Image (spheres, rainbow, N blue to C red):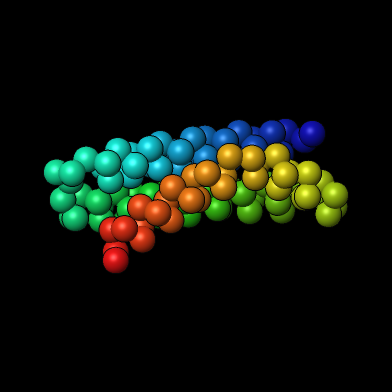
Length: 98
């Protein structure tokens, strides 16, 4: 693995960590009955920003991959655990904005 790929994966891992923390913050705010809509809306904005940063890092990794097999293997590696976060986020957003 090239040094450039190692750095890209390291940056992606850091960005994913921030997304995970944002999901936890959203869940905590959502579970608290006293949380205002404005606070939830601000937390969603932070989450959106962090998700965009993760997406940029993911794209950087994908551009460095040499073939489709590498891309599929990388996607499988990062797909683990993403579905649970996606379902949590979707449930929160549906409840907030419905």
